[in-house]
Image (tube, rainbow, N blue to C red; front, side, top):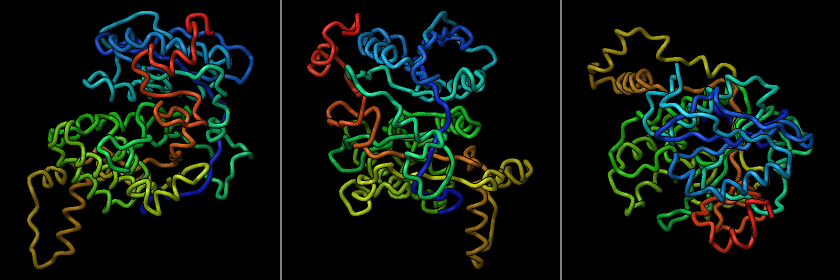
Length: 391
């Protein structure tokens, strides 16, 4: 499997949840964000919603439902208090796609906030709605702290990030993605590094077809950061780089997703034996890297001349195929921006245990639902009679 070890349990630390509004046309200076004071219920929790300006307007009522949810449970919210064209001095400014850029900015944001202010964020897409009277996030936050209530067969420490499975395969198959638009992140060095590394996949070249932006890249980001089956991972990447079909022809994209799912112990699809095993796991699957894995820094260990030689091609006699394969593999790694991350713990939950499920999927455990595009939709109207007043 490489450095990322599949484990069967996890825990957490004190937490926070945010509502964070950034805009595609006008990215907010992080120093301009205003934090409201939470009530003394469950501590320092923060819901974070990232939207461009059009979505922020279109989904005002959905976001108001999240404010009602945060108020009910005593969570923090972060709202925009000013706007600028960029974040001064931010390394994220070079990222053009705001879906990628948000992960980079969140990593910087957590770095800027000390642990007493932000312990954990819950990122949510702007078209997500809180269910009226829904349970708190406490059960999910337990994965981010050392909680004896979590069934931990191997103590890997608190998770740095918790992701969830989506509930459908838009190609009509049975290989749903890992969700990019909803995750829990603890304010740890490993989590911040993962978010910034994930954002760099914007610059990872591919075939020009539909790749679902950060939602496709999350699968490679997980495999790289957790150092899972590097050779098998290369086959999944080859499928990703070969994506040329448009959004009307999704089969190649979801075949790539299926390739990554298998390596992430989620099963090639959700209906095969391995997939059914994953779906039945109360706490999903958890991976943990060792301290040593992060020392595998190819770009640091090898001088520019070697990297240049890889770029120009290195001739190895075909009579020694073992050496040839080794050099080819080295050159692939030497040119990568994506490295294994030391001391990283990531959990992936199956759809029936998710915290922000697609609204069409009827997941009882989920206090928040995804993909509510219209506030006049039955699911919204049935939950909120007057969302502005939280009733």
